[in-house]
Image (cartoon, rainbow, N blue to C red; front, side, top):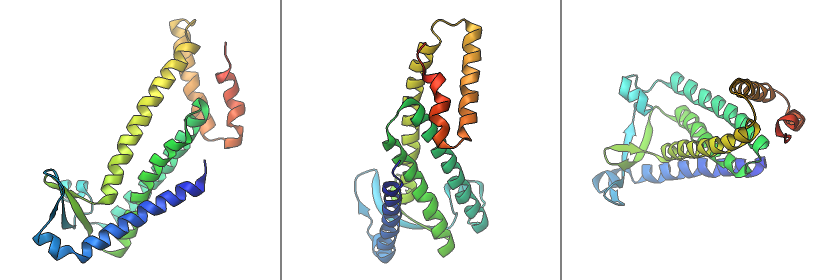
Length: 208
């Protein structure tokens, strides 16, 4: 995985979020008076969101800085774990490295949320879709979720084909044991240095 390209992509997304927010901020009053209507579902209509997140607003927590920091840091930690897991499965099944750009789309908004929380006690949302208003990082999160779902579905098909081939001559009990051992192997290899992965994968990739 070429880290330079991914760092650059994250930086581009981060800067795009900041640039769009700045443009909207400078045109706030004008856009409030006359929103830019893109289509019947979408328009640019800025709103100062002081709830922090959609969930905070729903449950009435409001903008709590320390909680927003915690949520952003926790998100980054979970994303790092997901990247490790994606790397593991990508290596085992020989998937394209381009899938890692999905993770970049998730990392950028998490970093941007930390940045905006440090600066001020509100979020400037400006993309109104029906009755809800979002910003560019929110869209990134939506694309990230969809991308992860597509990747998971694709991986499920690949794993089904792989496991079917490996277990075709096994009894029901042997299939269950194989499934448990395969998942134990992935869990164990997850904590090993990447340089040792191929050696651990050999017996599971070997044709019977």
